[in-house]
Image (tube, rainbow, N blue to C red):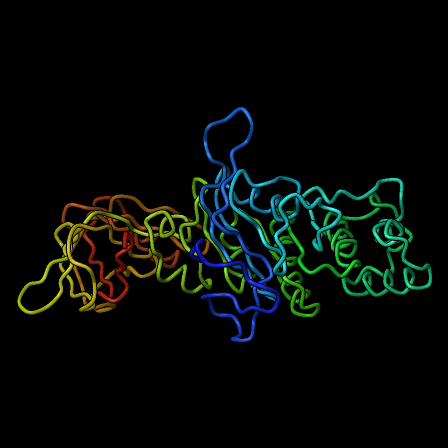
Length: 374
């Protein structure tokens, strides 16, 4: 996140932080943006500072009511900030209407005109901008080819499947070659298998066209699988910005640790004893990195980092099975260990063999334990 005291970035100015190429430039910037809707006192967006780089697939992830869609609507111009500024390609867009912003939006409900063919739907924004007809035909053809929908050009939206309608909506959004493409939970109406197929197709499409995608979702799997970077939001504020691996393996707050994946979370303390930094969590003790801050804290340990049996990690403890939850290809085994409960993710056949009250050992690597309240 960026310091709101910094001056606005002119076009071509490198943005800050993140794992994108060193020559990347900031194309969207939130400068201490707050949004409060009329009739309410709660802040839907609360002091957000954020840089989004040109050419990256950036996701805004959070639960319902976290402020992610409000951020997207302010980029599009459908809403205005209550305070703060938003910059698009180095230009302050406060008061600039949506039709004068170099962005397009793809919605969850597709928003296709039902009485128009797919070809006419895709050409519509070009016709509104009075692009020459010969150029329209070529650009529509190119856009439909990009999403593999050429053979459906003459059909009406109701004659297509959900996935095909979503591709048509993408073609219409891309035909104008916007600087930024905004996607508001575009896969939410699709079934699981089709949603997974579209995740891969979207990422491949973004790489091919090179346009900045800003993708809003509450689905952590979508955000982790497609994003170059992502921002995790809660209660209108950004909890963490980083690459999917950074956010997953090195969560900065208890919210991020609990929202991204599944983790054992609990209060503990970090002390300096016998010449080393040591974590105490329930009845467990384990070494930590020398630069870990001392004092009371919250620890996070991913379910998949906890193994049943001895020898899988440098920390082992005996426990008692409390419950086994079958998940299909795996099981979650809740084990009472030294005054707390640890959940281990295990292969399904191992879970089948366990019953409540049975004694079992759990083990994990101390390096997998993360202090998350820093």
